[in-house]
Amino acid sequence: MAVMLATVMQVIDVSIAAVALPDMQGSFSATQDQIAWVLTSYLVAVAVMTPATGWLAARVGRKNLLLFAVAGFTITSIACGLSDSILEMVLWRVFQGGFGAALVPLSQATMFDTHPKEKHGSAMAIWGVGVMVGPIIGPSLGAYLTEFYSWRWVFYINLPFGLLALLGILAFVPETDRRQRPVDLFGFAMLALGVGAFQLMLDRGEFKDWFSSPEIIIEAALAALGIYLFLVHSLFVRHPFLDLRLLRDRNYAAGLVLAFVFGLILLTTLVLMPPYMQNLMDYPVLATGIVLAPRGIGAMAAMMIVSRVLDRMEGRPLICLGLLLTAFSLWKMTGFTADVPEFTLIWTGIVQGFGLGFFFVPLNTVTFSTMASEHRTEAAGLFNLMRNMGSSIGISVVVSLLIRGTQANHEELRTHLHPFNELMDTTRMPESWSLTESAGLLAMNHEVARQAAAIAYINDFKLLMIVTLLAIPLLLFLRDGRERGPSAAPTT
Image (cartoon, rainbow, N blue to C red; front, side, top):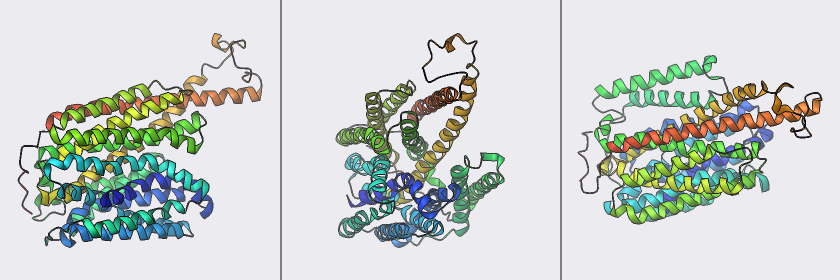
């Protein structure tokens, strides 16, 4: 429970802060570009520091690093809530992301090492609640706190959870052995440059119209250069910052790709559904959160089931079932209209949460089933980096396609609005529509824009469904690690 609280704090912080951005913007008198840095700075800091988790844990010990990260995250959360300017907020968000980057991989590795191998499925089910339910309840909790209290409480809420996590870690989490691992400063610098520039490009790409902006071109070039130099350097240096020989473990290598897919599916649907309901169906913010909450219930129900069966059976069939259920829910979402019934929104969300629960927990267990325990912290850092990259890339792609698709669909639908179209017979049109009066034209244009956006959303759901189905063949690269010992550890 202690490490799960730490996981919840870090995972929930992106979605809960996103809801409060409009109120922050007014409080700081910030522009749209400036307020976007509240999210961008946090995400870049998390992306840069996540790969460093393994090296830091080896040097100072996992428990010490976990305590330091939780304390730092909690203190910087309070500092964010006390900020009086946009510059202060962005600065503290950088530190908050830097401290929070280690929380998820450290808690995941701790859950593995403090449970025997036959209980890894149950351990991952408990830990997975934080990773999956956090982003789901984040928007609802953020909306409630912002509406009835203040946007500052979005950050203050971390204080009780942080204190409880600290006490629990002090009392129950065991310390690990330390290893005096050499520092590969050049490798870390190049990886930080590549990952940070890439995350920055993804976060600001749509706002800057992608590669028509010199800023995005520079960020893309820096990302490519940093990753290239890191890979070349890591292949030839004796003590690399991130040991690429971990990828020799077939389960781990395939698991990284599937983790990328999981991150892509989990957060992209969460990003798409609130504006779909609020902009197209006129749902209030709190009502949106209530309707989407059953998705989390489905995920928790799946995890409860998985925790009981995974320790006694192979994980690959469960992952396949999860992918199929997720693809089925996305297929049903491709049939959504701008007036989809509320019950349909709820049950498709439950099925999707159920599928993601069956996908995520066995994936974690199978991915690390053949990994030597002394390398789990480093492996968990890269695993969670891939999951976060999947979310960032997925969100950037679907939002870009949504905006461009809405514009293209609007132009296509507009060409059919003329007196010679038999469907435009005034006897069939709503009374508020008119081809001759300004008010009627505005009402007609509003509905055209609404339907154009609905089609763009459907195309995004279809793309996510295809990606989910394409991930199923990757299961052939996984093997059942229940009866095998850990793979040979690379020499470091």
